[in-house]
Length: 413
Ligand code: PLP
Image (cartoon, helix red, strand yellow):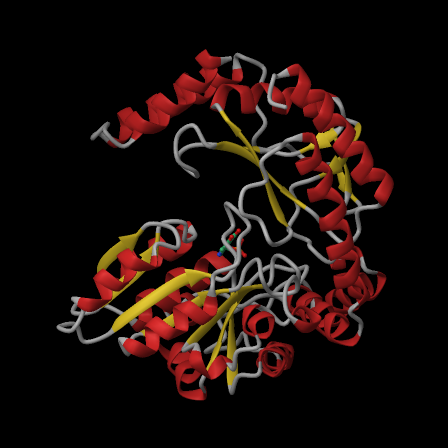
């Protein structure tokens, strides 16, 4: 399977070197067909129906190990009922952008609820988490500014920084000596922004916020944190990274989050000062020039947020499940990297082995996707599995059992 790994990697490496777009499209088409010919294609798998922790694909029941529905709220009866009622009351679309005809009172209710939950003055929602980073960073910053990124930041942050036109400096993951060297020479910019994932999606670790704030204060730079994988997972009632460290979030200029993970919907938000939110509402093209989310999407996130705040039993179950799962993997000898969250990576290293192992896991009824270069560095292929509050102990034991057999088969443990 080494060969398939090489085909995938070489195809990715060479794709952008092909200058003519038509040739690039043809090359990509040929490359995907070549991968498919191995009958080991585990991307874009169609799900026929879902109970969250359990899905059906190709007529087979599988345990879902790749879902970000951390608290299992997408299947909660209250959330489902609220969504059904909203469709009957509002229809399926808003028919316009927020600025013009597409603002529902529900959008404002959700934004107020997010601001209250996060303890900020205000919040504004976007159509996706990706769009939030892309739009917010590129609207707020531009030429004459410096944006500093951790190597492991999410692609949407990189894309937002590139679109902004600001200078970009990247430091090695959590390498604060390198970060300080960049900060020491950042005097000449109009604005300097440090953007970090609160929980790193490729390794599951939590950003060391106290150290980061020490540096942003020392050098007087702005801080933007992406809470895609921390909201609903860490802190009191899942309030996120500031609550986890007991830090007043006035020290964080811009708090970003997604609605597509613990909040069981789709969308993103920026929370912060009322001036920041007001500015984005009028100048962020991703809001102003894009149709607004329908009521069903908005009420799903709002209901999930209310449930999260009211009852932390799902959060407790999530952490019990994480401990069960992670300790089981570690006892077998798997490397789960730096994880401190519901993202539990399982390091495989070789890309070909990761793909072949996906086939084994798939046959055994475990749904997980290989995570390979360029999403992660070469030879650090992994399964980025995710734990949720809704997995049962029996399911976790079953997954551990399959990973044990797979690990022995592929000489990993
Ligand atoms: N930020 C991080 C850290 C993510 O991991 C993701 C997606 O997984 C996003 C942003 C994009 O969010 P969404 O999937 O809601 O568009």
